[in-house]
Image (tube, rainbow, N blue to C red; front, side, top):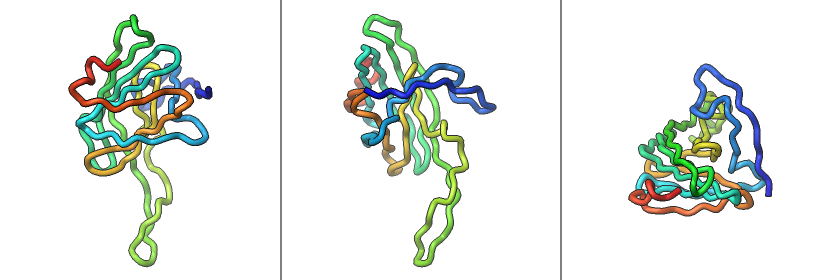
Length: 153
């Protein structure tokens, strides 16, 4: 099992997990993606017994807001969180009407959903859903109705 662990340095617009040791559940050679809409919650279970749930509360074309729940074990207190993820790219027009991304404007941390001691990478999909990336060797995931969010982890 491969889990990337690192310490994030504090930045001016630091995400809620800055200065904490975070396990990146999307750091592997071939991450899998799951489409997550606002009427669903994503439940993540780690082999350690930790679990998290993520709900995208609002979704736009290149951004989403979310809420999260996290438990380090089945008997541990539940930790709540919320945040915003977004993509912001410089693009260049190509002949024929296509565009190409030339650089990323926002900080790479702006693409991660944090839930307690774990994080997963996010990217835009449609105006109704986003992609969440995870490493199958590090975590099992399942989609549940948003009504089950509070009881999920």
